[in-house]
Image (cartoon, rainbow, N blue to C red):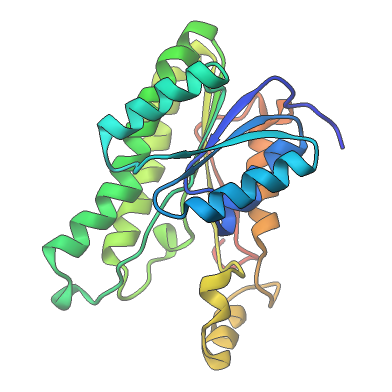
Length: 249
């Protein structure tokens, strides 16, 4: 496997499980020094770090809630002391609190926006300053197919993901001349611990919405993130890469 990310420092938020974990493994396998960010799952984050190190890579776990701007700043300061400035930022941390519009509380709306959208903003704002000095940086945001296609009962989540699409274009426009590439990966239905517990009828209905008639995997998403992080994507910015098996065209 090529080590084309050698000497790059990559921060993956929400990397203790699921898609974030797969992204951390993928970037580390290609030579990046990976910061495995987590909010609460310290044991799981430590396991991700241990696996990366066992495979010959370099990683550390770092706790910070991305919806807290002071915690985000402290995390970036600690990363710079440990590894140097972040070269690759993957804004993956996200939550859901699903409910129909008429039943959705203010708190559930705000909590999802604070983590998914404002968390992406806080981390991006912190990352770009050292990237500007180096005239290099890759920022990769994680969105969702529902940010384009919509879905009942996920107003707060969809609003946060649609906002990320606009943020991606805005930051790419501001930072392009400074050598910073900003893109988004929008997964469709991906097989994770969350989808494993769904009823088989629900799973089938989800799969039937795709052209490929199958779930995606966390590695499918991680591969797209790695591509954008790698030198192969140096002339790509301001874009959304869909990884959804043809669910949304």
